[in-house]
Amino acid sequence: MTVIKRPTWDEYFMMMADVAKMRADCTRRQVGAIIVRDYRIISTGYNGTPHKIKNCSEGGCLRCLRRDRGEIKGYEYEESCVCIHAEQNAIIQAALHGSSTHNSTLYTTANPCSTCAKIIANAGIVRVVCRVEHHDKAGMELLRKAKITVEII
Image (cartoon, rainbow, N blue to C red):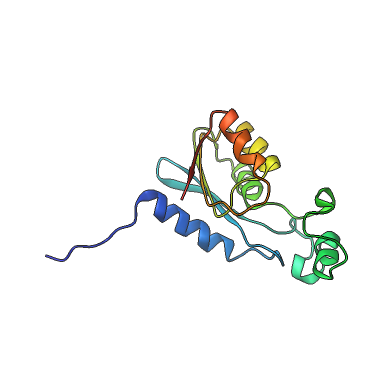
């Protein structure tokens, strides 16, 4: 009898988040996110510019363009960035298509920043599975304070 090594649900959905991040057009970091409820993907997202705005790699975000030219540091002027984070995009897509995120799990290939953590909390997401690589570690603390289960894999 052949034994088949199947991924756990968390491994499976994190692999799907890795696939989503392949669509990201950020010139610095690609991030993917998947929202799951009852073992079904209800939404996906990746980081990049808003709909109908030129992609980052095409100069759609002035802040990213300035960062890529070496005119500013990577963490400067974050508030002027027009790009949407993968977690935000996944939540927006769920709303756009009428899928409730209440009691769902969000899988993301980087830990959520503070802004994403606030949005995740208000979206009713109860669990976040992520990897740690984002410089904003305050988002993780905010999720924990909001009593959202956080698992790092």
